[in-house]
Length: 419
Image 1 (cartoon, one colour):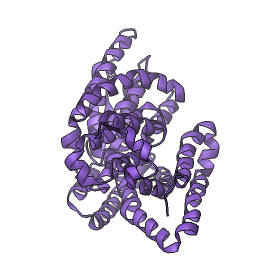
Image 2 (cartoon, helix red, strand yellow):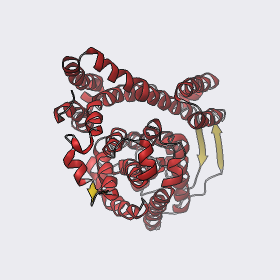
Image 3 (tube, one colour):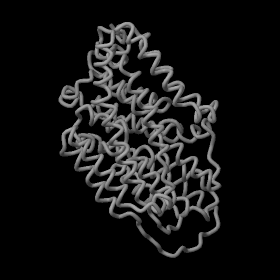
Image 4 (cartoon, one colour):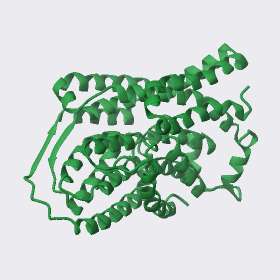
């Protein structure tokens, strides 16, 4: 039986590898991340086979793969393919007001096409708009804050934690109904800080030349496929939903010209990396979820005690802990861990602990903005900006921006999480 904390060591080893090796040895990680993931996965599977037997281990694997991992990969692939077949060409003058509006649109759009989709769709128009600017680094940093992270809170389309909650049975519209207040507070205050900062810096620069107005969207048909994905999430049960997502992915692929994919620099490598890493994460997370389901009587007794105050769940602590773990590990497994720390019963959480579920959701999504490794789009945006000559801060240099700006805003957000 899985009753001791030793069983979570493969999961801890995998997430620490994911957090530290890309920073210490990026070339080694790019070449061998699949082997590293396989090593930690086998570090769980082999002892499980030895201790639990083939039948129990097989049941655990099939449940995790069929109910969680495969739907996650199918949905992620569908969103990735469809959004990468849309290309936006826009001529925008990089004034503080115009950039603030672009960031606001991006944060809202991220709820529809995901933080990765919105980031990849809007980063090029943003970089074009700020070509004539002297101070540009802070603009990309706030883009990461808002479009790559904060904007993913309100729908399962937006970010991985919310989608995992949907797979766990949280209704599609629950985040929109219950999280709009913290979302609006976080978005508007971050936009306000950006506008003030950018206006001060803009006044120190030479006037920008007026740009000719131009706006064109390539691959418009993919908005139909995107609508199909949303409708699939809302109306179809899992089996038919997976089939629908596969058909929508194929429809997008075959209805879009190869030249469009070339223009968008389309590559399967990001999805391949996500598939490998998350296979290891989902499997090595099995023992942690089982131990957490044991509740206060299990080995996580001390954690449960600290998450309770006078017998009631500490909403603020759920928010900060889930957020900080998301910043240094990955927001998707962090959400699953704290979801199960809160009991793992979706109906109970929705009916009687909505504040806890809101705190876990908001913390996991928002605080991915604190580090480059907190959410997948962060590093993608950083790499694209650097290729176009914009100096981006180092890992800890980025945190010198994110911590003093975002942490006070996170504190303000806690007043809107629940009773």
